[in-house]
Image 1 (cartoon, rainbow, N blue to C red):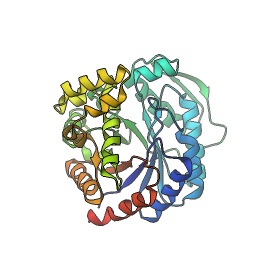
Image 2 (cartoon, rainbow, N blue to C red; image 1 turned 135 degrees about the vertical axis):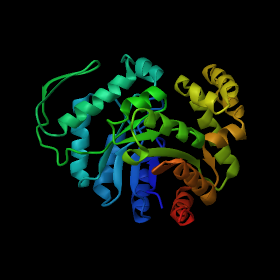
Image 3 (spheres, one colour; image 1 turned 180 degrees about the vertical axis):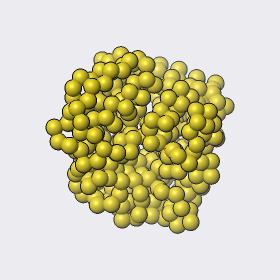
Image 4 (tube, one colour; image 1 turned 90 degrees about the horizontal axis):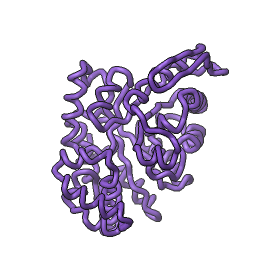
Amino acid sequence: MPKLGLCIWPGTPAQAALRLARRVEELGYDSLWVVESTAAPSRDAVSLLGAMAATTQRVRLATGIINVYTRSPLLIATTVAHLDEISGGRMMLGLGAGHRFSIEEWHSTRFERPVERVREYIKAIRMLLTGERVSFQGETISIRGARLAQRPPRSQVPIYAAGVGERMVKGVAGLADGLLLAFNPVGRVERVLGWLREVGVEPGSFDLAAYILSFISRDGERAWAAARRVVAAYCAAPFYTKVFREAGFGGEAERISKLWWSGDATAAAREVSPEMASRFVVVGGVEDVAERVREYVKRGVKTPIIAPFYFEGEEEYLVSVLAAIPGHLS
């Protein structure tokens, strides 16, 4: 059976997230990933992971992801070292570049050379986690004589990079410990593995993790409505244009994007077809999610991460589904 992870949806209330963390640890899940979205800011990953580190004992914890434009390498190294200390050596670090619009318009930072920036962050953070004094001169960052005041408990915290496009995937291969795929349909996994092989990275030496966006509700209509809205939001992100086009939904995604940016998110969501939504997300129950997990694993994903949308009032139902999924995978 694969090592299952659970992603905490950005809109999940803090106390519900902490309850889910404790429950999935009891259920034997291997890892918890906390999303920090620059495109839909709601909650930061660090504070929630600190609380999880203090209230769980076994499950691995990960930022999934934090952004390389909104925090410095030194701050990220400090943060992950401290979380690793609190958790007793259970931390993993997920890094990503995010989206040009939110970085430049909301964070007042130039979105330049994202592939090189992620690469240099990985290198600099690894150096800082040794506890030694670090000077690093890159093309996008510069560090002069920095050192963490407290030596980190581990210098080898696993680092994952979020990758969608070919340049990012190839750029982090060989540097990161793993690649985190978000909103990538199953059929795209083989393309990603091909890119890794082109730069000499064999799947066996690199952890491929993938979010499985899941809409789990007793109310099927409610689940489909939420799924359509989320897919419509992804259509509005230019970053994913190529992904939709490769999957055969380029024209549909373009129409939805125009509606979204015109300010009519409701109309945009109505334009998302069931076929399109089903390619990118899972709507359903135990067997539906388990089948998607099996599909990803069969294609080469080592760490499938179930990412359930948060529906108020359905926490116990969600836990019951999460409890049943492992039994459907063995």
